[in-house]
Image (cartoon, rainbow, N blue to C red):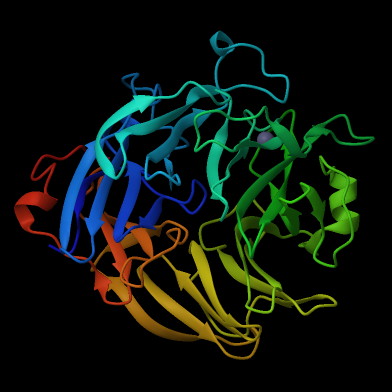
Length: 432
Ligand code: ZN
């Protein structure tokens, strides 16, 4: 089959909780949300062309209440430490009062949980490590060249700071959370809080890149209004943050400070969604967002991909002059300051290439396309092998099932697996 598992569950992968996979010593390890919203892990040995798993790697407290609806926030992020142990963080959506006092935000549900493989390079057995905040949401790992692991997340529900915790001992202990984006009551406006959606990744050398957008978090008539796009970077040598121009920032960054120092795009009345960020070989950041019509969104008011690059002096770009898939998740690879490839999910997973700094894109290779199927993708797998760049989940709309086929996609399309091994669910189905 061209899928490696069929027990992906509901909104099983996203670019947000990331990386969802890592290529380490010839093996690509992948993680996703499986049945009952628990995290599952599979591994592909490239030289042997052999799959193992999926194994259930932990137990989320989400997804266990019949009739409660599917939360979908607790998707796993995965990292392999310098000794080859595989770590997952999953299950968080703000935590519960029974987990203690959240001094950096509010609570909602779930519990952020950390598990590690019992043995290096072996996904068959797992143990819980109780060493991170239970309040985290949108778990993201950043591993540095020296082996340090940074865990970034939102420290609770909507009204919570974005933080990181740093481990210098392969994830066995983590320092307390450090706030980098501040959530607080909007200055002069008692009706809403300033809140954020953020995404962090490793840059060149010791840099950690961050891109984010602003959530207008209403106290009443709450909706998902998000606007603008921002970028900032931390040097792990001194843990100081700067904007793209290299000017120092005061952290945690407030809304006013972000607008003054880190804003890439002011979307005005348009709403935005966060994308990803990567550096080009010259060290300039590139970022994407999705920008669309104000809400409440009517059917047919889509969000379009917007792409920006730092020229060395300013941000250039916007919505490209080429019709491109709408409402698509994406990540990118950057060959040179003017050459970018965007990998877009949606009705297919395909590359879109630009050689003119993002003014125009042309569709390139299609990694996968199936009738009636919509694909969610992860962000790029860490240290990805060219044959295994992202994980994708296919929602076959005709099947009307909550289970998703899971694909590992690279430059040669999906990595195949014998049918008997790829089918965990088989003909069982759970109706949507
Ligand atoms: Zn909110």
